[in-house]
Length: 117
Image (tube, rainbow, N blue to C red; front, side, top):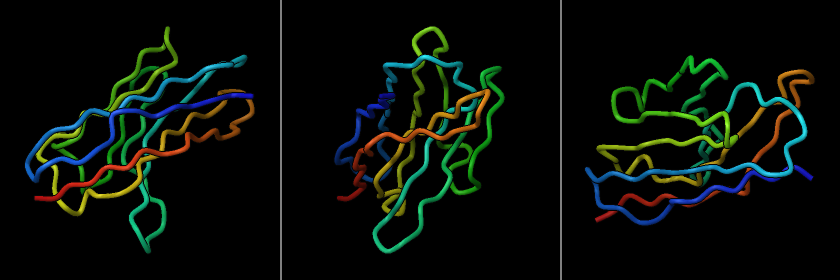
């Protein structure tokens, strides 16, 4: 059973930084695109950022210039460095990985990020 495990969430002051990590295990296939999504209370899950195996990146407009996604292909791990956090960034953040052959999606269990004073 493929596992994606997020870490690094927590409570942070507005304007502060936070770094999320997502480690994958029991991977028996080639991972293609990896990414981060988030879901705030009462809202639909939305894209935060994605990164291809060749490290081409895509960001939601709301996080451009503040968040940076990166990955370590050898470790099947994806990160997101979040700077200048705003209260509206508060959400559960989910890691996503896509099988490069079947395009099946895999999800982590989510990690809570709360931006509040």
